[in-house]
Image (cartoon, rainbow, N blue to C red; front, side):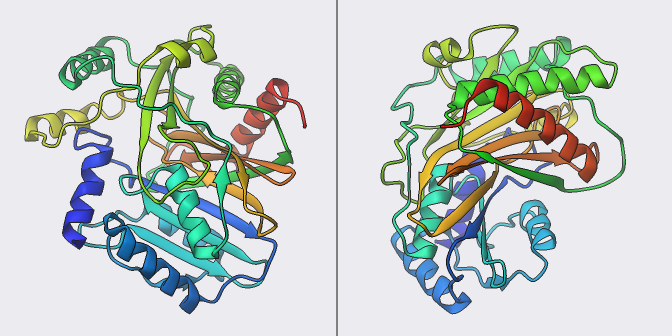
Length: 350
């Protein structure tokens, strides 16, 4: 089952997808209680994998004395076939639980469900989901349109702050007072932050395409599965909420691909994708177990930038994950500060 689970996870993210990223998504939970012992975490994880075999092999539980280093490794290390699709680390002092997963095995709500299993507490999100909304066009039609877009009018990008031969990503997180803001508000904030960033770097912003991950199910009682849709929204001043109501999600990837398609995707990787990705886990309930949640979606596309958000208790945590070859840690912090400013403009504390 391990190989079957691994192959399935790689198919979900798409054999035509960006081959330059690890497709690792991360959730960093600052705990309000003592962190569970690694042996207890592994036993709970083993029981969950027995019930949900698509999660693959049972991993070891790491002790994260250097949380930043473990986060970097969890995010950047490829998920080799037959290797575990879940990564877990725990820090005892300043109690924190770090959970990562291959995005083909779990989506954001699935990662939340796994967090609840590891902590042995009920976890839910106020996310309502989009239901069983189908794709609007066949995959081949969409693929040809994306090819034409890449060749003749690629999406705009967030201007890199540098160009260095580095691998992996950089991360930044900010805690804000709890905000009443849904996916459209976060997408609009990301677009405004992009425009301000590019203007400060002497560049104009055209053809902004926002990628958005959206669960098909509600977050009332999430399970550790992948059941989400992917939207590409051409903004250009359009009403984001209106686009989300009327535009169908992107079609699913096919079960098989050709060498020519994979080669084309690799050659055009710098012109494919979107300007940025946004993913919001919504208002998350964990009782008093979790003080804050930092969610880091996968960063791919032209800019290699993903904006994340999650709210728990009285805190909304916004994050940026960016490609290290284009952004160092101070640049990621500045980009996040611009995103946080735009988020404050969009929402108001509850």
